[in-house]
Length: 317
Image (cartoon, rainbow, N blue to C red; front, side, top):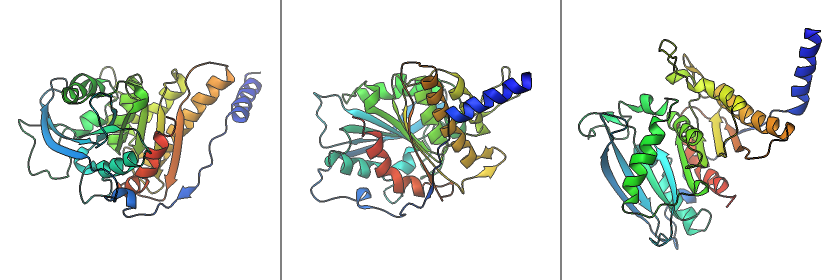
């Protein structure tokens, strides 16, 4: 009887939920026109770096940069785009060039007037090291891969109020986006997971939804990124709109298989929606645009897809 019942349950789930069959894309690598200054597009301000000492993430110092579009007016609250690993996101010769892409899309009316905030991970030192260049500070993993609310508290209780001293920032979660690559991507999702009232949009490129932050020997054990699919399937749906990308040649090491982990994330998000529909639960649904590419674990395809991702993420406004 139990075997028959199990079969019926499996059959029900199988027939009521189908995983997406997504093709592997090969994005055009290199810089597009959206990554370069364009004639006729008003020039915004790129400011920084500024140094910031956190009290919530004790003992850390970080740098951040701001992009303020030419269309910004202090009388109107501006959207917010937080992008992690700010030293790479703003690299003038890099593949992301997020401020330039923002300038072009805002100038063409393809995303709302938005202030960019590009933040490095913290470094355990009195001052941010001048010799790091575009490398990673030494407190990146404890901040980005931790599945708790400390980083979201830092962001919402310290960083945004600091920027808000000078600029009128919207509190509408539909106008607030957070993103990153690799561990910066899972950090972005964690912020939205804990505070969907503050950030309703997520850009996730080559996300590290694996066991980097998992600490089984702690009491209680600390969760890792590999636990997100189970949480997503069981907990109430958050109102999150997410662009999810990974490459099928992403990492496969002691922390996990990145491509499989990203596929598990998509399957869990779709399952949560299907379960809510099946049970007639009213309320939000996850909105997910997933793109699988033939890329490896670097920022190349994130950069290539960034204009497309930003256009999609704001297409609901």
